[in-house]
Length: 112
Image 1 (cartoon, rainbow, N blue to C red):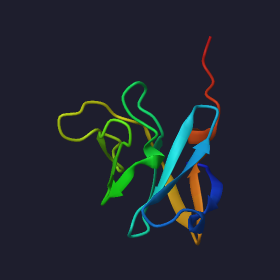
Image 2 (cartoon, one colour):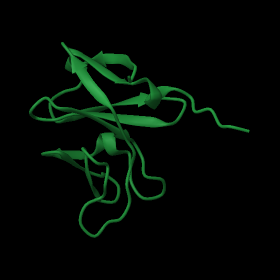
Image 3 (cartoon, helix red, strand yellow):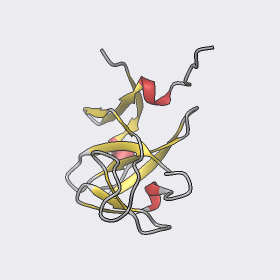
Image 4 (cartoon, rainbow, N blue to C red):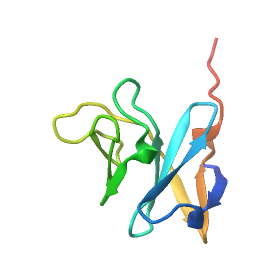
C-alpha cells in the first residue's frame, strides 16, 4: 500500500498550470490539465530540460521553456526526436486536496 502526503489544494494550481514541490530528492513539478487531471514529474532533466513547471501545457504534454523539448505528462518520456525521460510520481486528488506518494518526497536511504 502506498502512503500519500497532502501537498495542497488543486485550486492553488490554475487550469493548464503547474507548481513546484521542493523535496530532499529534488524539485517535482505538479501539473493540472485543462480537464482537471493532476500529474507529478521531475522539474528538470539534468542538462537537457527544465524548469518544466514554466513550460507550455497542451493536452497531456508539456513543452520545455528552455530547449523546446516535449514531455508526456503520463510517462515522463521525451517525444519526437528528443531522447530522455523524467521520473513520474504517483499523485491523486481527494476532494480538492492533491496527494503525492510519500516515497516521492522522502529522502532516499542508501545501503552501505
